[in-house]
Length: 176
Image (tube, rainbow, N blue to C red; front, side):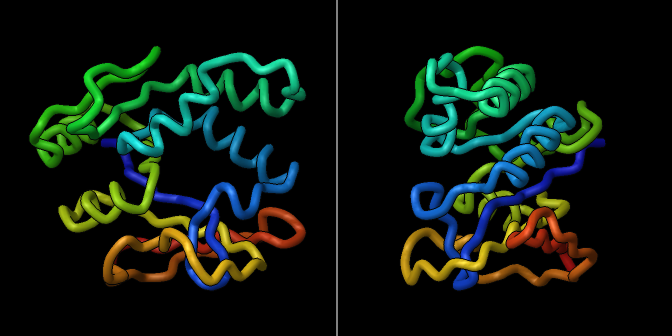
């Protein structure tokens, strides 16, 4: 059975914003390895559209960007959307019954499946479907933005911490 993991970069004050701070080269290489090992990813429409950036080649990319793009393109992507009519390569739209679709996905696959985005994570967490939360804590204060937890924080139990690079630690929690 697959394990659903919600993990994102987060500021000290609890916000996620890919435009406000970026991963260091060391952290980016960590994300490349994670993408290589993941069974797939589940997206909402907004974050999926942002991530479609990796479907196209860009001449300014270095070796790490190419490596991430290869890993991202390889894995299947499932998109929970009521607005999108179609999705790109190696991606599929989930049906109207999100809970049934995710339960089937978990039953049919092994390994880790990334849950991408706070709003989708809240919906899946409310259904009891998130197995692990990973907070990549950065030493920045944003004072605004999208919170890591899109609603009240679920009951969680701390299970691990790991220093990923000079200034980022990963905190791992599971539902309590």
